[in-house]
Image (tube, rainbow, N blue to C red; front, side, top):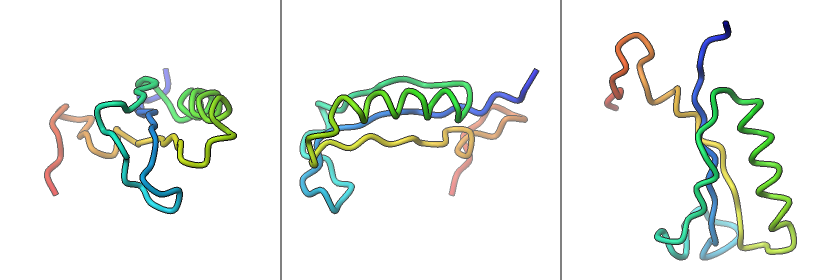
Length: 78
């Protein structure tokens, strides 16, 4: 069984298409958490395609597995 590498897909309306600052954090679209990058990429593409004509809408993939320590299931502190 492949190693579980969790990814979060979410998006929302940006204050400026050149930034990553969201206009309204309360209105973020949380697409979901996925067990691997391939599944997250598929979900990201679908969400992005729905809003392709809106330059202020942007979706992201966050590599949650990079923030978690798989050996202990604890959040790593930076």
